[in-house]
Image (cartoon, rainbow, N blue to C red):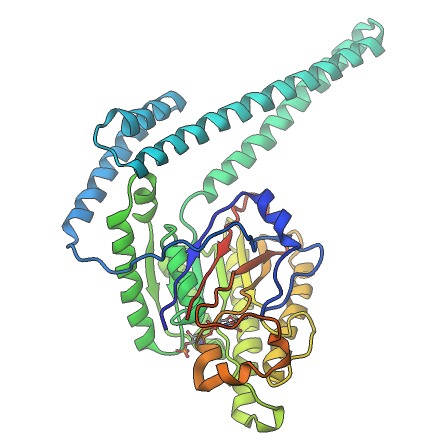
Length: 437
Ligand SMILES: NC(=O)c1ccc[n+]([C@@H]2O[C@H](COP(=O)([O-])OP(=O)(O)OC[C@H]3O[C@@H](n4cnc5c(N)ncnc54)[C@H](OP(=O)(O)O)[C@@H]3O)[C@@H](O)[C@H]2O)c1
């Protein structure tokens, strides 16, 4: 089954407006007060999926990359706002034979730049006016007393210094996070995990793929590398720069085995240096039937993969993240039962997903004021192997919890991300995954 995924980056305000209207899917619905990290938005159309094959060789891409690096070094030498504005204009307008798309991109870039300048100027004016008002009120109240006036001037100066320091800190932190993110995704050789890995990779991030089978891991790395080559071949400008940092590596790991999980974390640190995002995606449900028909082995497998595995991985990710200089974020996958609702015919699966919510609630409190963010990702219903294997699809139609949901071969499910804790300086991404069968 081919998995097609699109990543949308949208303004935060849109996201917040839509959070309340998130559609209830196979995953749980968002709880009130949960900050939106993703969204379900009617306005989004499903764009043409990426073609992940390339016919031409790698020479053109390498040339492109080399040229790009040269350009990058050149622009680095001429730093500053005006040189960047000049280079954008030159690059995008003065060079002849530009396609419509490139022209539109260029216009959007310039627009973005100008609007950010306008915002900065606006902020500056508002700040100056408000400090001016505070100063004049202070002077009026001092009634010309020179000692009071000096005190007001000193407090004003102190405020300016503290404000500048806080602002600079925020800008620096933002700047540090703007680079490629290092992402670990468990269970990423199929379905949602692989779809996520592809999206991160094609956004210029460095990704570690993993599952129990070393062969699947190698095959997935190969496939994603092909996707990346294709992405690089089609990219221009800043997208190409971004993609030049992307990388995909992998290692086999059974999340039920503490030793494997530790090995995965060590591998991640060795390969990437630090971990920005760790997604506990590996999961299984072993089919849809009454509990009496689940074998001992099935039950053990579901609980140890979904619950024990996620706990082991979360602990290992926390160990790594709390020792690194920058913040890290852990995501556990929601699923049917997360919100505490009943999940007939998949009772074991539902209880593990409910358990993960409990874990999340406790860790949010344990991790308060730490550099580790703990979140849940709620994919809604997506027709992956998890649902379609062993004729689950047919049985699924009869179960209660899917009544009202559209289940069609071209069913598209939005991927909802919920961010339950915000760490300052973290650049949130907004995903909408569409996985047609
Ligand atoms: N599909 C949906 O509609 C839906 C809805 C809500 C939530 N979710 C959640 O989303 C996650 C992914 O679901 P999916 O539909 O993409 O499932 P999937 O297509 O069955 O893929 C599961 C992935 O996990 C790996 N895996 C399974 N057991 C593992 C273990 N013990 N250790 C390491 N890797 C393991 C599998 O690879 P190997 O078998 O090779 O190890 C595979 O790569 C799950 O947590 C699921 O509960 C899915």
